[in-house]
Length: 176
Image 1 (tube, rainbow, N blue to C red):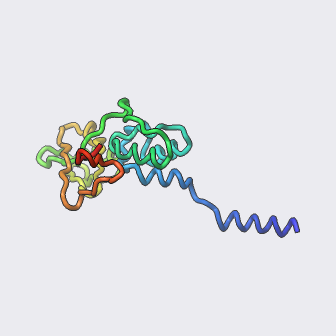
Image 2 (spheres, one colour):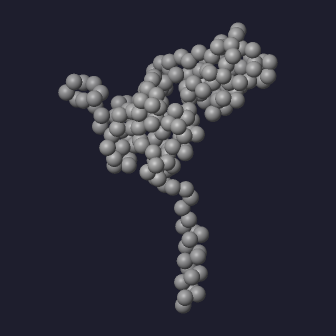
Image 3 (tube, one colour):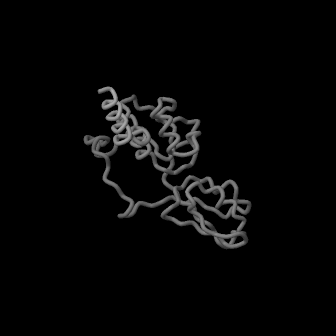
């Protein structure tokens, strides 16, 4: 009988194996996926794993801002904290744009981009894949000729989202 239960438990452990940490997966989905490192972690996934393990606070993501902090607080059932000023400040979403006339093709921006949003070859003009750019600004400091501008992404019908009804101040008609 012990052998039967041992085999049953062995089969169940293989069949019902949980890959990764489900709470870390949920946290990672709430993060903006900029991979910018402003939180002092190498990317969004390591930050999510640290939060799931209780090793990091929920307020270290400037790109996510207050909305992400609120969503993380709701998910983890913890108190909402103000954005940690040591990590940076919340800014509007931006997009890297390379001024082609000034680009010398040094490839330093390509090496710095954590999401491979920049295309180009050595000594050739580079360009940014706008759909892939997260606006992390990591490509700007290594550029020796200052040919990368960060422009604010304007809302359009494709980027606009309904306001979260849980965070609306209905009396004043705006967000709280």
